[in-house]
Length: 124
Image (tube, rainbow, N blue to C red; front, side):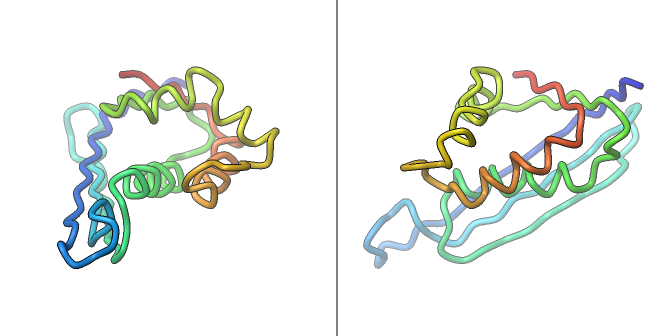
């Protein structure tokens, strides 16, 4: 059965000026699931010493964990790089190559294994 959920993912992080890498800082994500114009679930998390990219991948991991694996879910993303990772087959390639030289490989590996048992359609 196709389930149309509107999924809104917000990600933010604050880089500290005292860190070696200004792209690392405190961050968090928030996910809002809307089913038939009704709020059905909110999911949020936060971490220290993180990046915007890690927060987005972690948000997807938490989202997939909360989805019913029986349904086909359409997920609308506003992050072109994340969308390309799925639609251009990069994630499958990275998995075949054991995530060699891939940033955030720990998260991509976890997400890859989670989506194997689910039917997802990702759109921009």
